[in-house]
Image (cartoon, rainbow, N blue to C red; front, side, top):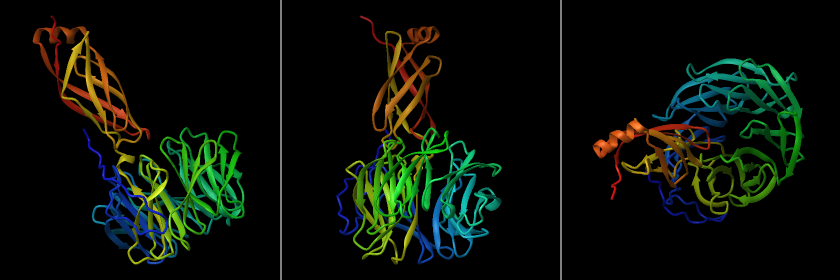
Length: 442
C-alpha cells in the first residue's frame, strides 16, 4: 500500500508563531512564492516549509507557475518586462524571455506546452511555447487598447482562453489557437480573476472595485446568473477538485481567505490568515483540495499561511519568507495534480463461484478516488472503484479457458493490470503478478 504521511497538525491562531515542525498530511510538492519587493522567488518543501532555495529573478515579480512535464518554473517580472525560466531540478534561472509589456498573471495549459501571460498595461496576452521558451503569439483580449488584461483561464480541452480585462470591466473569451474573439461580457467594477468550473458551463469571476463580489457566469448563455458579496477586495480563485468549494484570496486588511460553497454561492468561512496590518497575496491549493497556501505581507513576519480545509478551515502552519518583503504570487507544484492515482494490488487472489476476488487499495494520496478497470491476463476484468485511502474487492468473472487452466493446475500466476483515473481526470497504469488459487471443494 502506498503509505501517506500522517504526522499530526497543531492549530494556529492568526497572530501566533508559524509552525515548521509539523508535516502536512500526504503532501510531497514544492511551493513556489515570488516576492515583489526583494525581486526573488523562494522554493519551499510544501509539507514542512523548509526553504529549498531562494532565486533572484527580474524586477517586481508578480506570479509563478510550473508547466507540467517540463521541470521548469516561470516567473513574470513586471518592471523588467521579462519571464524568468527556472530549472526545478537545479533551482537556477536557465533563461530569460522578453515579453512586450507588463507581464502580470500567468497561466499554464494542462499539457504544459503553452503559457499565457497577461500584459497588464495593454489589451494583449502573450503565448509562450515551453519547448522553445519563446513568445510565439500575442492575442488582443479586447478592442480597447486600455483594457488592462489582468489574468486568464485556459479550458481543460485547451481550446478556449478566458481573459479578465480590468480596465473595461469585461471578461472575454477567445479561441486559444487563433486568438479569434468569441464573446465579451460586462461583469462589474474592476474584475480580477476568472475560473471555469468542471464541465465547462459555469465560470466564476472575482470583482473588486466598489463591489467586492464573486459572480457566476453561464457560459452557454453568456450571462451573469448569480453573485455573493464578500469582504474587502476578492482576488485570486481556486476550486476544490470536487467542484464544491471556491477559495478566494482577499486583498483587504488583515490577510484573509474566504470559502464559498458553489454553485449556491454561500459563504462557508472567512479565515483570517495573519495578524492585523497584513495584506494577502495569491493563493493555491493542494491537488486533493485539503490545504490552501496563501501569501501575505506586512505584520511582524511576512510569509505564507497554510489553511487545512479538512479540520474546519484552520490555519495550521506558517512559512516565513526569507528577508520579509512582499510575498505575492504562489504556485504549489503538487505531483498528485498530474501523475494519476496510485493503486496497490494484492499479490494473491482466490476463486469463489467462478469469480476471482482481489483486493485493491486506492492510495491516500490519490485525488478523490480511483476508478477504472482491473484486468487479469487470460482470465477477465472487473470494475475498480474506491475512494482515496480505502480498499475495495474487485470481482473478476473467469473465462471458460481460464477456469479450465486453473482447475487443471490448481494455481495460476497471472499478470494483473489496473488502469484507474482520479477526480482530476488523470489516469495511471499499475501492474503486478498475482497468484490465483482455486478454491477447495469438499
